[in-house]
Amino acid sequence: MAIALALVWSAAQAKEPPRQGLADMLLEYLGVRYPGTPLGGHILYVSVQRQQLFHVVDGRVRDSYPIATARAGLGNTADSFRTPPGLHRVVEKIGGGLPPGAVLKDRRPTGEVADLARADRSRDVITSRILRLEGLEDGVNRGGGVDSYARQIYVHGTGDEGSLNTPSSMGCVRMGNADIIALFDQVPVGTLVVILDN
Image (cartoon, rainbow, N blue to C red; front, top):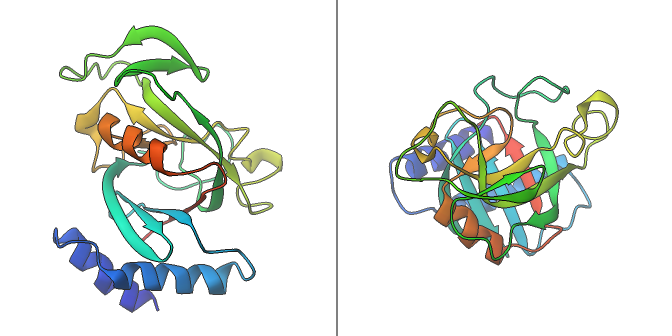
């Protein structure tokens, strides 16, 4: 299965339109890895190797977006500044109605709007929208010192859109502001999010 997935992802990386094979392989993987998990509706698949987020709806790839995961790589421990692997769900949506580039701190708007044309790389600001994640795997991304919710792991907009397509975040999944706004408006609370190192 891994070889077939790699072939599909290679095609996607070559800037071909997302293929149905990616969705089929993803659903097959999730069905085997997480038996009994409902796989209808919306699923967000974060490919760390490709630095892409794929939005799958009812078994079909709806869209894909460039992202940035952690500069320090995958990992689940608190204060590691790593992106946690495994199965999550969107537990909270924050920022609806805010203007593009609106800066959020502690999940609240500060009143500032980032200048998206000029990134301030000295600051790692969260902008526009937040999809807050909750881990669904005990000992992997839920509970103890590995809890994604307690670590405040999000999918969110960034004030540094030039950082996308390369691992550069402090643990969260960064997206472009127009992309996170579009995604935010489409996915409901409870959407599954799977983060994989492939």
